[in-house]
Length: 375
Image: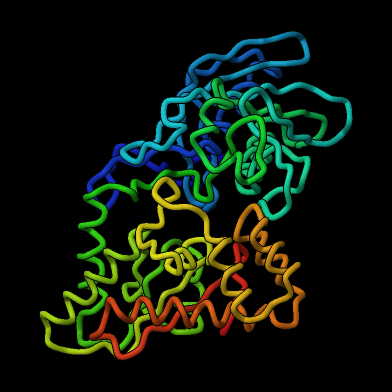
């Protein structure tokens, strides 16, 4: 890595809502891999390392707790997971990497103690693979290249001390991930999204989005749908508001602002993954996984009402994730019609909370950003 061409991501600078950011389990594991390699190959025991973030524009400096050789072919490093002001179940856990030479001429990933293994389809990794998501894998591969100039001939064993106990507090057992936590993160940075002050900041963002008497804004639970808002709807960036899990609050803020201004909005768009938005069909408006179940039952219920085959309804009910349900429906001739119907139902329920929006439109996307229904 050449830090001169990258900017340092400074975690001491608060997020826009005033809260402290943190580092993901993916960033922790990547830093541990890099520190272990420095010790294994060069005998350097580093107190901190720099890792490249997925945006390709920033690097992050990560402190190393411990680093030692296990034998002549293996080194281990440990990193403390710090979730900032958005602590999740892994906040304060120790993420470790054991790096060993394998003589195989390729980079291999393994689950260490406390990191789970995928046992069911529909996840971001194939069945039988360690629960290390694609972005953290790419970050680790880049870290290996940075230290060694090639990514061949190493096994990366990624673990979490106490991870099996931590995982019981997550959805992992229901998702078919056994043995521990998942190594996650799409940006390498934990944004403090689930705090009361973030809810207050959403109201500010919505009022900005509604400024200048615009006729259209979009609310997005996450980043999925952002490309659609920009390229298909051609909305300026400030007209799209990321609302995290707080869909109900965001709709209420929108209605309150419109009522205060004594005007109507032509179109309110809701764009995102059905794993979040379809929870509305069960009356859930705070979609945080710790406060709500998963949405497969709602999807299956709609399928039954639309006279889908009983075996298909059962398959949807038994899917371990909503993403797995999208895969089940992908090649079904009436799959798009089902998602379109779900979009319409979500829109009707949301419309009831925002009567000053003349029309609410919903577009659902899978994790790759592909439109599922009307999109």
